[in-house]
Image (tube, rainbow, N blue to C red; front, top):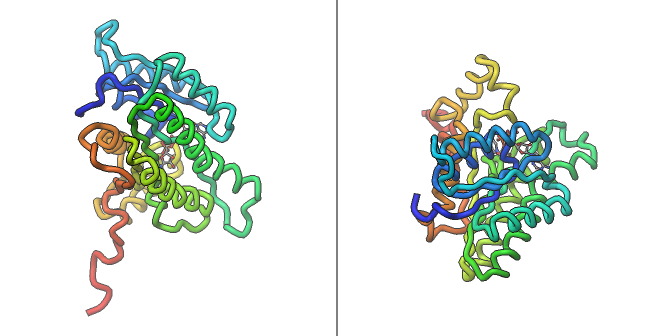
Length: 269
Ligand code: NAI
């Protein structure tokens, strides 16, 4: 895609699922990739191997570079160190993908305070801190750049028993729009994707069970879950110059999930 080759992208939570697919796709498009992981260096190494394989095939050194960078996005110090590591290695970077995210299930009236803080500090505060440091970097080097937040259909659809997740993604929608408006005149674009039900480890509860998966699919107008690669394609588009005039938008990649599937048929004559 136009304008991606030679750029450098930092992807948080890139050792599995959608983040992994994004790292692989951006490397395939010729971006250097900084692969953030929280715990499993083995998983991150696998991401790196697949990304470099897509980028270079059998070629030993095709110019695309990668970096593994450990860090917990709920920890400010980790984020500062992660940003320094990326700049040390590549000199600068052009694209931030705020992908790291978690979800936990509780009836809302039973959510422990520390659990509320844990989800919000990963999904929303972490995305804000990464965006803040990235924007400082862009401004200090007087360079344009792109930030893409991995939100969710729950940016707009309330999700009972997943209140913390819904709040975090709702907040991410406004984070996207507010930053987009504030920095548009300085060449910084901020957009988001909102995946629907996607086959990744976060959804192990139903992806490994055909009956459960059929139930999930029955609620989706296109009658199937999405793949991490389909999410990564939308991210590559938003990061590329093909989307040069887009900012402040959330692209819903959801097989029609946000089209009010209950209205497929008339409720009454
Ligand atoms: P996943 O569980 O495979 O990926 C989440 C990644 O975030 C993991 O690699 C995990 O290690 C990382 N992570 C979690 N906490 C972290 C922290 N504190 N610091 C750094 N990394 C951390 O699941 P998936 O589906 O790939 O999730 C990626 C993003 O996509 C999340 O933000 C999620 O909310 C979003 N999403 C996923 C959907 C789905 O159906 N799979 C639907 C809508 C949104």
